[in-house]
Image (cartoon, rainbow, N blue to C red; front, side, top):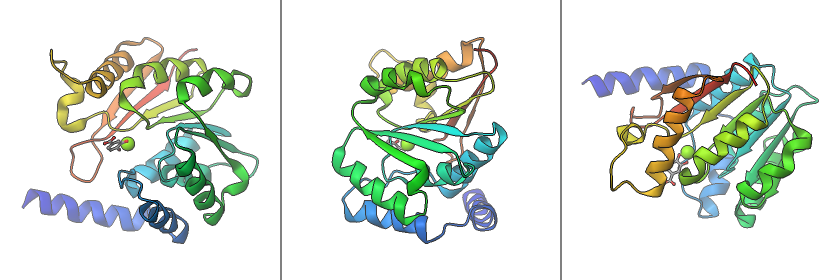
Length: 221
Ligand code: DHB
Ligand code: MG
């Protein structure tokens, strides 16, 4: 009953405020055809990324983990004409799918997919910093290191957003036998909560309130 009501409202908000066009649908289809997992953010989260990008007047956006290019399309579309999105992707085949989906969605010119392990690529980005918004959505075990780099590559007022920081609540509960992914998420939530340079909240805003985004604004850098 409550779930139904919640889904009805979510669906209404999604259709009214975050409609998907052919570019976004095309990216999902291309990812599916290429056998990529269907674990992208939802349209409301995509629109929220745009709201945050606009709020911090983003000209330069960094994404860690491209997956289907779906979030990258939402982000790139929030950029002004001279804006630029760099997205880091470890899988070269997936990167090709993303490039093609970006072009198809009309954001080919303001986007760049860099292939490699993010922990190796991040140190090469210092000359291109600061980034106004950084979106983290890659392997969960490395989230604490991604946060460290995100802060390094940001400015006062930059917004650092990370996906999957709820995970049914396990991302808040350290346990003796947690796996490396869970440990990464628990640590990420702890670090963002305690770092005096950040103001942070977690939003449980996926389709069924089981997962969501950690949003941290850089207060001082
Ligand atoms: C997984 C990764 C994600 O980024 C996500 O949003 C959902 C699931 C995963 O690795 O299973
Ligand atoms: Mg994710």
